[in-house]
Amino acid sequence: MHSDFPNIINKDGIAVYYGCILNEQSLPTIYNELLNKIAWQQDQIVMFGKAITTKRKVAFYADNHIDYTYSSVKKKGLAWTPELLQIKNLIESQTGAKYNACLLNLYHTGEEGMGWHSDDEKEIITNSSIASLSIGAERKFAFKHKATKETVSVMLENGSLLEMKGSIQQNWWHSLPKTKKVGSPRINLTFRQMQL
Image (cartoon, rainbow, N blue to C red; front, side):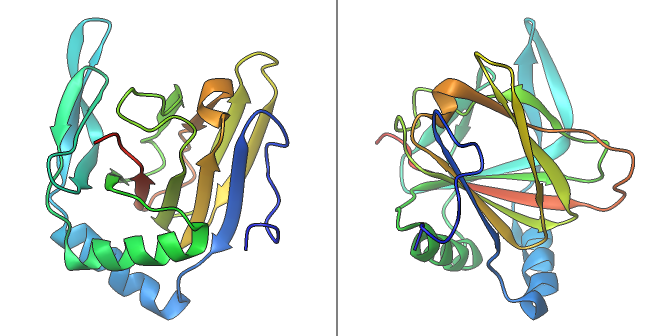
C-alpha cells in the first residue's frame, strides 16, 4: 500500500503524502462536526519562561490514562468521540499503523501557523508513525533538515493525509508557515503512538 506513494524527503526518515483520502462530498460534514463537537481550547504554551496563550485552538483525545506534555504544558487525553474513532479507523487502514492518541489543531486563518519543531517528546514512541489529516483550507507544510538545512514542502489539500515515520523527527524539523493569502480555517488531526 505504501509503495504507490513516494517518500517526499528522500533521506533520514520517511514522509508519505497520500493526497485526499476522504470522499469530497463528506468533507463539509466532517469539517462542521469537528468544528462544533470537539472540545477546542486555546493552547497554553511556555516560551522563554513565559506562559503564552495562542490564537490557534487545540484538543487532545486519547485512550485511557494517556497524557501529553509539550512546550512545558501537560494535556490529559479526552475520551474519543464516535466521529474521531471513525476517522482513526480510516487512517489506520491507510497507514497500517495503530494510534492511541490524537492532537487536533484549529488554525482560524493563514495568519496562524507553527514554527520549526520536531514531534520528539518523550511520550511519543521513537520512530513511530504520526499521521496528519488536514481538513479545510489548503496550507503549505515545510520540512527542514537539521544538519544540511535543505527544505522540502508540500501543499496539504482539504481531506489529505501526510504520514511521518522512521527517523524523521530526529533529523528534520517541520512547520506550518504563516500566510496572508488564506482567510479560512484549517483543522489538523495528528494521530500518534504514545507510550503507555
